[in-house]
Amino acid sequence: MNIKEASKRTGVSSAAIRYYEKEGLIPPIDRSESGNREIDDRIIRRINFARQMRAAGMTIENLRHYIQLFDAQEDNTKEQIALLKQQLVEMEERRDDIQAAIDHLNYKLNHYDDHMVTTEAELKALEQAHDKELKNND
Image 1 (cartoon, rainbow, N blue to C red):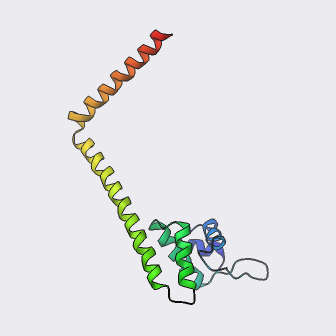
Image 2: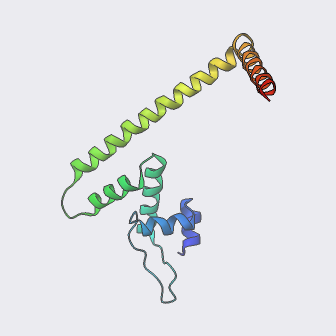
Image 3: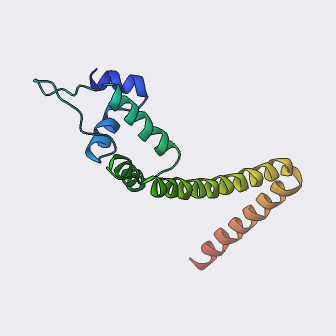
């Protein structure tokens, strides 16, 4: 299949597929005599893997390293597992940060009348005082 068909099948843009190939996240893609990429199921599976790992927050560098470990002749299972564990820790930290932000927004929404209105009135008063001071200094 061509790159456009692979893009539709994987949900990864053609530009991203080319980038994945350039960065070594997928193996070099075979080309037809006319120079068009000919993408087979092996490449589709690699594209999907790269997409999933990127969606899991893995950096290009770590993903490239993981793929190099996977493609190597020797058994690198321990290093691969260590990379995945490291990624899990990073994603859990992000989740915790996102959860804290969600909790904060929920608090603001649940206490809008008794907290946000007062806070916003205070901020507006400070802005007005600041503007007045600037005008007086002119």
